[in-house]
Image (cartoon, rainbow, N blue to C red; front, side, top):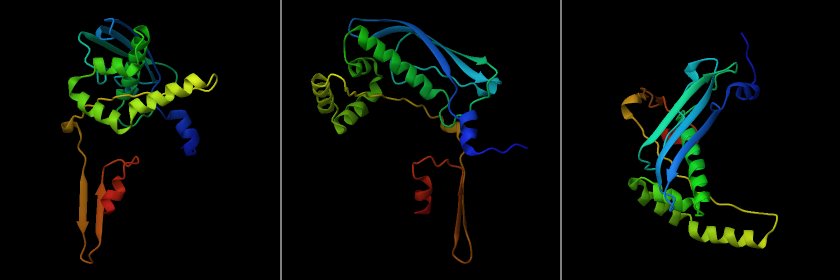
Length: 202
């Protein structure tokens, strides 16, 4: 039996699986993507059990999108991801594509994002931009960059569309109330900073 400290444990097995992505696409002069072919190779380690679908169109409406993700077995250990395996890898790939298209048509990435975004997300997107004062911050960033030769600032917005499938989640919660008035609460939720345990205590 080998028991190691958490730091080398995370360094050896933690994080998401590495991947390599390439794509071909066609777009209009405005930045609207017409079609896309995406190829993703994912390093699954020594076993295909480490495979996760790391390709997606994220929150964008791209007709005729062809998504291909293949797992590649290597001599490395399997990575131990937690929460949404593959989903956010796919989202980062799509954001890279959006930025590449924005550069090709000489527009701000946020304009290309909005042009390709699924209609159902537009309202929430605009509300968030207003809440964080995006336009004012963008202007301040551009002013700063024009006045500073070596120091630069940046700003970027990123949407994410994560589809939950309720039938695949079988979470449980047990509440026991004892004769002396004490309460025992057990749940299968994962506390990752969202305050679940605090809410349970309240």
